[in-house]
Length: 506
Ligand code: MSP
Image (cartoon, rainbow, N blue to C red; front, side, top):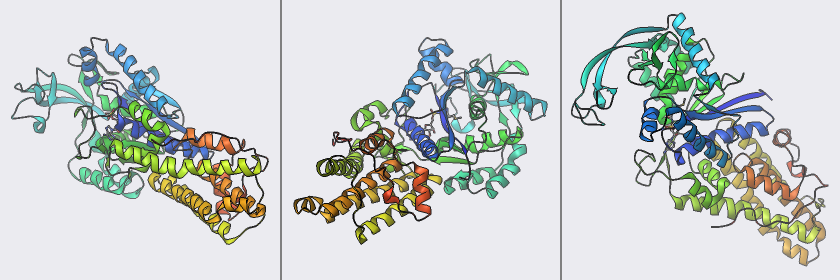
């Protein structure tokens, strides 16, 4: 094993709104990677949580007539419930109002201030009195505030800036010499394109007179910290000794803040950069519209989980999206993916196989009596699948990994059709039957172990049906790599137990 510690993060979610499908997706991606790493015996930390400061949260709290912190407590709970519902195996659920995080942010600010990387200057921009905020020139609608359509005024106020521009060249050379740093490659090019233009310094303060819901600057008590500067540092506050992160999963809309603000902050703080930042695409409607709260076309995750189950929803997320590209979401696609892949292919295979073992072998693991070219071919396929899944997972290609595993389940189903175990039983060909059922049980074990990262509940149930001591993923990989037989790994003392089909068709 090359590395024994691994650190994965999700973005931290804004508590000014409620969770929806898009948020669930980012978390499931990160969780899949974390679970796979842990299955390989790696000590993996997964961090998720909520982003609780800033103007939008302050406004949302005001609307609800709550104190900001009370509002955050209520909303953060919803996000935690979402993570629990989706079986996100987080090591910590961090909140930016947590004391240790506030301390991390203030320490980072003091360090940068002492090093001369933070300075104060006058900031001039278009200020809307009605909306109580600055807008950039391009935000304005006919020269007016886009939110309230009232006039804006040119206002100058003192602000604090982070010398982001000082780190531009180092960042560019890091991106160029580390092709794995920003993925997929199209996004990496976007970031490089952006950096080729002028990169200014970053305003990291907000005057308390306008917006007080934030972390106070340790060197100027009239100001709080800009919410992104605060939020990004959660990855360090919650690292618990695991820094640098192996992978940050983020949506494409927040790639620039991660690739540029975050990276330059880390360079200035003399900390290692994360190994990889992955920007995934969006879930869009059939009309190509992003699903978002502001557009009002979001779908409740609970409703979807009630329909196809949490495992089914997780499967859909990973199987129907190509990392980096947008994915079209519709309930029909969700149900069809579930019925075809999860129920018809996998669950039926498990059920048919365990039924045969119960019916003809009294729930005992049958022994191999012979080894023909049919078993030989399956064995070779199983090895190839194990190794390619491992490679895909190490490069975050979940969709490809799942399709390889489906290929192995398909081959198992085909083997049943070709070997005709019912005829073998009728004709009393007990030895051949033994081999066929044993081989099928082995494929149930392998495909269930391989899919634990996506369907942790259902695949565990499938494994419980066939053995108390399933093979571990590391052993599977080692056997496949060393060209040992992977179809002989089921514990022969196991007892097959009866059960209803694990997933039911809708
Ligand atoms: N709070 C910031 C992140 C700070 S990280 C230091 C934030 N929060 S968010 O709640 O608005 O969004 C969190 C994630 O959800 C983002 O990665 C975003 O891309 C993702 N999604 C929101 N809607 C989405 C879709 N329709 N589809 C896929 N993911 C999208 O940004």
